[in-house]
Image (cartoon, rainbow, N blue to C red; front, side, top):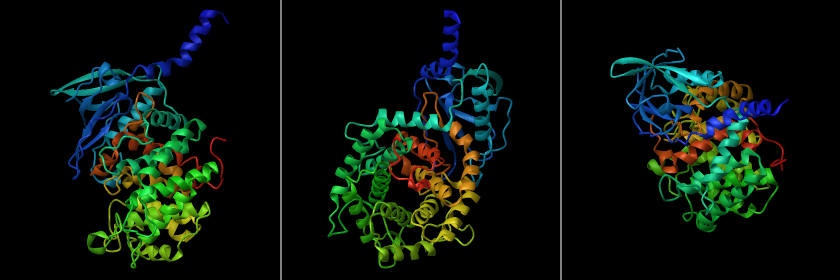
Length: 468
């Protein structure tokens, strides 16, 4: 092979990477709609933001990123996508059961096909001021596999971690603790020793910022239960993955705090006191159960009395129609079922308890997987715990649901190699509180990692697996 031929071959191999590298990282401009009047979402590698309202078939362009594929291809804010790749969509529905069906799914499929084409060009029909025109938009070539995308997300998280060990939250307060725990879990799931210093840095920040506030003799003192549960889940998964028991005392302290905050009626709240006139929040109970179950794998002795009291509230919160977990025993019906149901299914399977109930909960998620992005105003924990629960309780259903969610991943991934936040159809205020950029990458990373089954919350059985 002569020298010019080698240059051509190298160019062909590197061309998708070179195309991707020339596009800046784009963050979609999302306006939260608590009542579902509209839904804003990223448009994948186009580097643009779209909007849909109930019954619409055309995606309204709300924002176009500078120097991205959409801008270079002539797409403008105010345009409406009529069709993409000759694919005309069904109407969009704000019903959470419908998932991304309609214009979002059709655009995602067209993008994937165009990225695989030679050359990678998306032909799009656009309505601009009531006039139809055709655009030809050059895209980054190739569609990365799940492993490559997970690595790209992990590299992005590594690059955006702050010197303190945390990631930038959407607001102040304690949002950085809860969110940084998921970012560190995503790096752990990426299974590369180059991420180990960042994981340990995050753990040390969380322990200093949160665990250090716990007074074992006073359950009214210390972090919120959200923070204690996510911290314990991260510490347990870290110890199981690496064999490093350095943070075993902090793991036990967080788990003990959660046990001490289970009320006599088995209810839990944001902190020590039980909100909603004593009705509580089952979303807290289930995260505590997952923390206890994972910690037990590290040698922690579960407070059986606290477990049993909490389980009474969990069982009483099961919706008789869907088989999923509702808001509480007082409000068993709830459309946002995924975080509560998934975390509890995973907890029971990790702890080898009540497999029938675990399978029922996972089956409910498979049947209603369209709701997975809706969880206590947080798409993030809906996906993180929802996919974990399905993976543990219904492996066959997990493979099928992950396949059906490929359009979601396609619209989430960006031209720079990581992903953008793709929230639910209603309130995403909880994720705005955490920080859309880091939590968006973490939720997709853990969704993809659930297929690998390395984390124990994803069905892992091996210990000391990290980096090997």
